Image 1 (tube, rainbow, N blue to C red):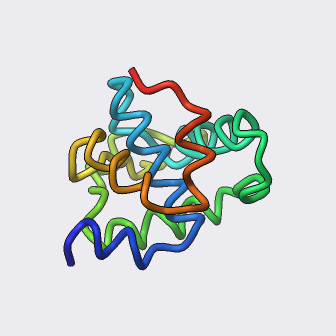
Image 2: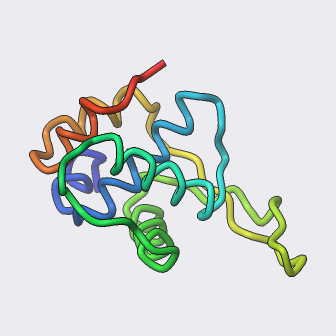
Length: 121
């Protein structure tokens, strides 16, 4: 599936999580684990001052990442990060470059307020 087709069929939660992955990558902060990406998502949702979605739970982010990985938009780079219990956590990075993801996400109406709220490096 092409990146554009995958984004066009993605849920709003998936688009928000993909935006977080792209943002983290543009800052050199990938690969990132689910908790880090959840924090990026929720920080940007607050900044947007738009009720696009509420806050995302850890389960929401996890489901979105699995779907995005299946669609070929993010890649799990292995359990190099460890959780508080000592188990490995998956860490994710975008497959396309962040700028192309920002451009493709700009075409998703509900994500536009989030794109306007963040400063891309």
